[in-house]
Amino acid sequence: MSGHQAAEHAEVVAVLGTVSWDEFLVLDCLPTPGSTAIIQQRVESGGGTAANLAVALARLGVRPLFVTTVGSDRFGTALLAELEQENIALHIVPRPAGTATDRCTILVTPGPERTILWHPGAHLRLGDPLPLDRVFQARIVVIDVEDQALRQFLLDLPAHIAPRVQLVGPLTHLTALPAERALRTAIQHDVLVGSEAELLTVTGCDQLRTAVETLQQWMPLGATRFAAITRGRDGCVLVSEREIVSCPSFAVDAVDPTGAGDAFTAGLIYGLLERLPLPELGRFANAVGALATRRLGARSALPTRDEVLEFIAQAQPCS
Image (cartoon, rainbow, N blue to C red; front, side):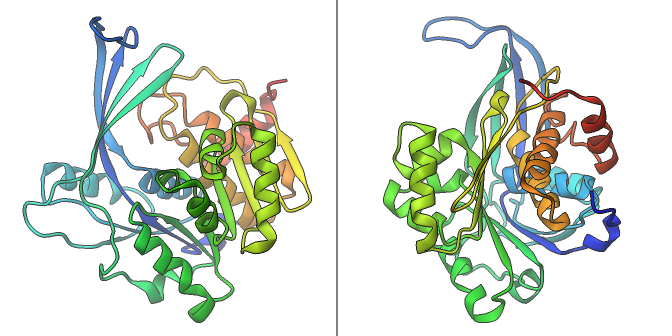
């Protein structure tokens, strides 16, 4: 680590995207058609990929600006109450009365594995009154929005108003696009981050090596200079135009993988701010993602910076 104090990173990151209310059902098995599963535990808490990322950054000592929206129901009220307890600069885009909040029902089964049932609700969209001047004052802007028209609008802005801003693009919401369009959109971000499955979908490939080679071939055609691909128990792969670095995962007693990818992204952004060398960057991000799986819920186990450093010092990476 460079020794920078966390306060030096105050509000240097802006995150735009969805917050959702999660209902977790821990089952004894994953039900198949016609079968029965027993609910062993039920928990409700805040989630949403962008919100999880923002909270994870805050726990690491990086106070982000988080731009999002919620519905006018009790779930939206509960989400705001949770987020206001975190070290986050929160900007809520208002929605009309009667708007539903985004929600997920998450089935956690042995492994642990998860199955997500999505109840779509309020999300950011093109035309919303966004605090763009404030957003693009940040050094890093994370664009994690479902609305592809809004994403494209945000991708086009920095070249005109903030050319030094680094745009980070999670691949999650790009997988809904046709492969070539998804890839053309992806390479407009400076940094890409996502799972192996997401990269395969975005590139239209069926093997990781081919997908990475395809991404490297496309990088000179766009803005992307770096990508981080998570592989679960197999760690992560960091990719530049000419370099591929594999970083092993850490062994933990995982309870629930929900939000681990968002935590990994937060660790990656922290490492980018600290200008860590690639192997150290991957190790730090992997550690944040691993620690996030220790308890039920997307945010319940998100670690602090000191917890991550202590874990890295004591833990042994998986072989």
